[in-house]
Image 1 (tube, rainbow, N blue to C red):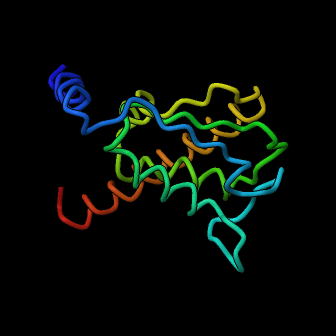
Image 2: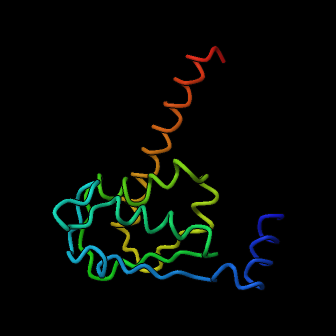
Length: 134
């Protein structure tokens, strides 16, 4: 509730924009983006992740469009989208990121990558807690 109030106040002050539109194809320039990292001028998942994170606090809503995208590799999806969960909660992810034109296939791939990333995050936290005696 407080977070929503702060966002609303920032928007009224002009310090936070309402929505950012990210057209994936316009950035990756291929219908089959792949790879975690950008190599030889070809954008990888890290490019998309950086765009999302750099704009996270400036926008109330980030829309990701998949027009022109036929398929994405699991590493690309994990790096571009699921790794957002390393710095933001699942609730924040769900309230900030929108995929309005995602096909069922893309939604399934996103869901799978997010579930796996959440398991990885939990495993790392459990290991750190065990090492610290918690």
